[in-house]
Image 1 (tube, helix red, strand yellow):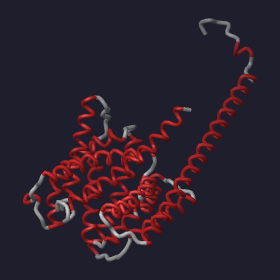
Image 2 (cartoon, rainbow, N blue to C red):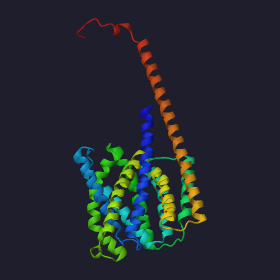
Image 3 (cartoon, rainbow, N blue to C red):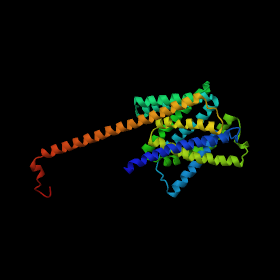
Image 4 (cartoon, helix red, strand yellow):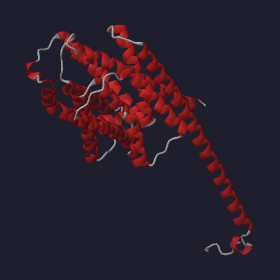
Amino acid sequence: MEGEKKPAVSDVGAWAMNIISSVGIIMANKQLMSSAGYGFTFATTLTGCHFLVTALVGAVSNASGLSASKHVPLWELLWFSIVANMSITGMNFSLMLNSVGFYQISKLSMIPVVCIMEWILHNKSYRRDVKLAVVVVVIGVGVCTVTDVKVNAKGFICACVAVLSTSLQQISIGSLQKKYSIGSFELLSKTAPIQAISLLIFGPFVDYSLSGNSILKYSMSYGFVLFLLLSCSLAVFCNVSQYLCIGRFSAVSFQVLGHMKTVCVLTLGWVLFDSALTIKNIMGMVIAIAGMIIYSWAVELDKQANAKILSNVKHSLTEEEFRLLKEGVDHTPLKDIDVEDPKA
């Protein structure tokens, strides 16, 4: 019984770590990048710093024996890193070229896109109540986040690239872990160095095209360094928990329940930064939370149904094997059982 309860507690801890670290890193990055804070407008380079610290933590963990390094083909790591970097760059360009409203819509579209991709790639189907819960979550988050919706051709293309690459990246995390029987942190420690090197090399050029500012001209301060270290530290927990949650559950569950972070960000923005919180925001948050509860309930019912089916199949197979074995013994001639020659 204790062995059955332990994973449940660990699952809750994984989700809690992801939500807390994600909300924390958003708050830290807001202080770093906002004009009222330190004005560090180099988002892609900042992400490169996040993966650099994550790679260093992974290297120390492997060297000290706290984690094991399993083999994953280099071409799969490179392919995954390219997709992940396209996701980061696409999101940054989408936010720059589109309105905040369309950016939020593109993020919401990841849920159905992930569902379609899993159906195409893994032939995965979903129950009707799971689909209903997904729709409720999308409506709720849409109500509380989507405001003005403006889009242009370039912005639409960037949003499509961002949505497709992000969805594919999240599906690939779970697929690689299952394919090579590798843990979440072990996989992250292999992909983080490749992403860190590529983002730190090409990130400043991408950021220059986004903001028109050169990172070489940025003047640092002690406060900036403190918040940079805080952001990178939170990024380690955020990255690890993301791989952990997707590896244990699914990319769809990560997207649906991950919108709890949106609710937390809106609430903390109202508490800490005096952001406006309207009746529309509150109604959207209530709908979104209701959808998440329905989704969790539907997924749990699905797990119980699958477990019951597997139990019945296993039980019937055992009975069938026993029946065939019994019939075989009953119909076996005695002369075949009687061993007369020890050498035979």
